[in-house]
Amino acid sequence: MGIRWSEGGGAKGAEHRRAESDAQMKTIRFPLTREAARELRAGEMVLVDGGIVITAGLPTHERLLACLEEGRGPPFPIQGGSLLHLGSYSQDTPDGRLEILYMNPTTSTRFNALMPRLIRGYGLTAVGGKGGLDAACVTAMREVGCVYLSFLGGGAPLHSAAIRAVEEVAWNDLVAHYRLVRLSVQGLGPLTVGIDAHGNSLFETLQAEAAARMPGILARMSAERSPG
Image (cartoon, rainbow, N blue to C red):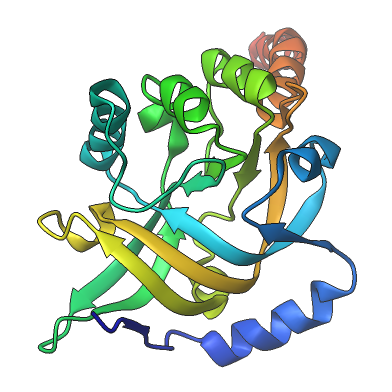
């Protein structure tokens, strides 16, 4: 089945802005090798070239897990690859193709309960989306050698401009942004390594810093409200 991507939604402007920052960031090639995943460090900013697998659907994750539990392969191979929490505004064309108009990240924490088993079962080297993942997921990532890439929420023009082709689509009975989709991308980003393969998490660090500052903030607020 022929599948294409249609440019739109400010793609030219996004291409120009991305070109200006390309020289300042590391470009990594997907599928990401386990060795390359372990070389990345939390806080690094990267661009991605190559093949990625995306979905924004909980039913899709449940189906992938069922494949593992029932000993059958997924619709196309994802072993040692990526699973990124990216949704898309897409449409089916009259000739049976999937046309992606734009894509944007969804919140990864929605999938916390399933991700440790998927990371271990498929030996994933990269996951991502927005909002991070919980401690159980971080443990699985450290065991396997997997990184979490944090996408800019609301950065649809930048993310969409990186799409070069839609390579494969599975589970067409689901709504378009829940389907399992393999994309070819170039210069996808900028993305932040939010959790590295050694268990270092920017999300945990920021939460700890915020918690440490909270008593002082509350004390100042209380003092300001007290009558002089």
